[in-house]
Image (cartoon, rainbow, N blue to C red; front, side, top):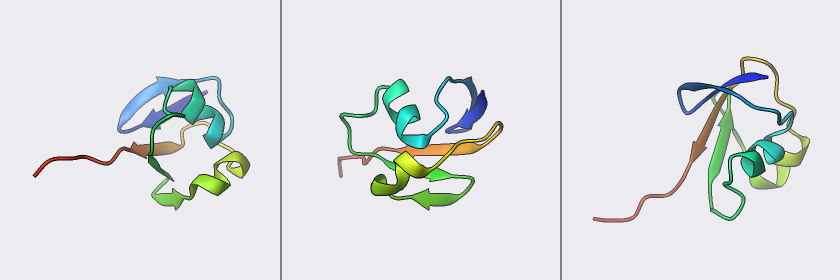
Length: 65
């Protein structure tokens, strides 16, 4: 299905948010996620179904000063 991930169109096979995180190789990183502007907590990613055209944001913390 087609999703908009961090502002870029992407074709993915994942149908749930947790599977998308694994598909994009983010599973070993601390990330925050949002779908269509709503934050999705880590413990709810496995229950969050994705739909064609959803806008997904995957955010990683930045370090520095």
